[in-house]
Amino acid sequence: MKSERYLILNLKSFTESFGSNSADIGRIAKGASEEYGVSVIVCPPAPWLSAVAETGAETYAQHCDPCGPGAFTGFTSPEMIKATGATGILMNHSEHKLKLHEVEFLVDSCRRIGLSATVCADTVNTVAAVSALGPHIVAIEPPELIGTGISVSSARPEIITRAIDAVRKINGSVPVIAGAGITGEQDVKRSVELGASGALVASAIVRSGSRRELIYRMASELL
Image 1 (cartoon, helix red, strand yellow):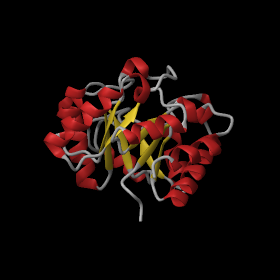
Image 2 (cartoon, helix red, strand yellow; image 1 turned 135 degrees about the vertical axis):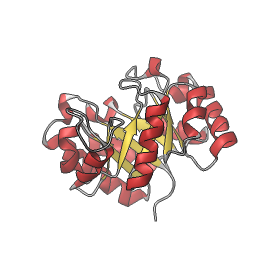
Image 3 (tube, rainbow, N blue to C red; image 1 turned 120 degrees about the vertical axis):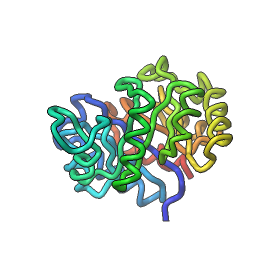
Image 4 (cartoon, rainbow, N blue to C red; image 1 turned 90 degrees about the horizontal axis):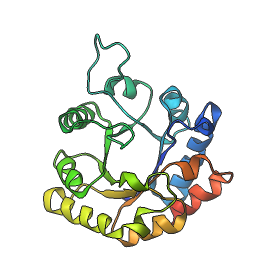
């Protein structure tokens, strides 16, 4: 049985995630998840959602449009994402923002059709607002640290603890994970020490020459 600890790998749209690379990361994530009993979730670019889901890894879309099936040319609905075999959606990332009512629509849709919803938030106030919607996970990510290699757990540890406190006052059942600038297992360890339930990591994994070792080391620090 898996613990309530999460490592979410956002592969973004880096060329290093194209083609078979996403599925390769999916297989590594599945192995790490099984070895350590934690959730290692992969968010590949949309064209490779099915390929990652077929590896058996927990697979989330990187974004979703607030719509249902129907005449919505070029939009992606939660129902379409579920049909790929994915198990959840990462939404409201700072690189693809949504309005609060759109997040609410998507969280409700995920609940209705059996997908997990992880909502990113850039401030403590936003964390509080989205936690009231009852998502599966909330990720606190100060946008100024994303992609910098300077982790939120070292540069702004107080935002993690304040976010956790805010969620506990509103909906204590929602886990909070930390993101932005996470580059190594020490950042994951520190996030957990601060009370987070895990970490959201992107370029450090996708662009690493030793993905397997890094993913396994990060997952081990969730215990």
